[in-house]
Length: 350
Image 1 (tube, rainbow, N blue to C red):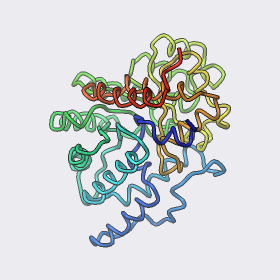
Image 2 (cartoon, one colour):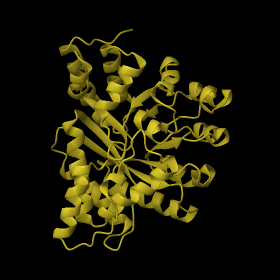
Image 3 (tube, helix red, strand yellow):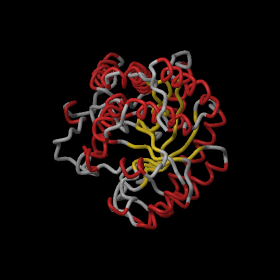
Image 4 (cartoon, rainbow, N blue to C red):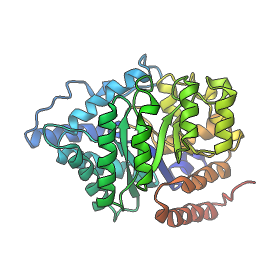
């Protein structure tokens, strides 16, 4: 089967997708119309083209975090946030995604509290449980948060987890990797872990071996990006040995890393080191709206650049199910992907 047909048709799971960064251009326009119709002043104050960061863009990883403000200003009310969540969910579904863990940082706005933010996203995902795509929520702690703010988000997430145990599955640390110290967030993350929540960390987006080692030794359930872990990519032998020892699954975001200049180009991406070392990897989008990509496109790029054959690509999709946070969904999702593999003669290569 041709990759252009295989990748969209193949059932896939998305485990690293920021809600506000995943808003497509059509969704942004829909949000502008919705806000105008409901009398909410548009404070986005930007051309929508500024929301997208392409391969030739001069902006880097730090600039990327400023871009999210455009989306945040369009999702300030419960109604607009619910609409953004619904439209994004359906776009992933249309791309062949059968399970997704959206992640988002709860925000206080003039129209809703942080609790209402989490409740709105959770209620929206719950109300869309009838869709073929199954969805869950990971609550984010931003690295620019104070210790007190991080503690508050952790406690809020635990509280909402009790309210929405069928929706909320984890907590994560993300944001500008040049801001904050990981050790400051360990108590908040540990408290969430003890309450039953899974942990994923943005790890190794920039060269910081000390922090990377601290994160890996914390033993999160997954890590995101993992750019600067291997010695050839800004890591050290110690960080690489730790990852190989702990076998922590890595959420790989090819286009995101290239477009933010974290990686020189696709051919230079650290995916090949992880894949060849049999480190668990999951192909993800990160911010499909910002980087003008899709999960299908990320799979196709992976196959084209690293010479993967269709059975190998299908095995990546199947293996990714092992690392989803909603254990109760694993069996049905795995069956769906394996049925596709068997139907199309894509039995996994040894």
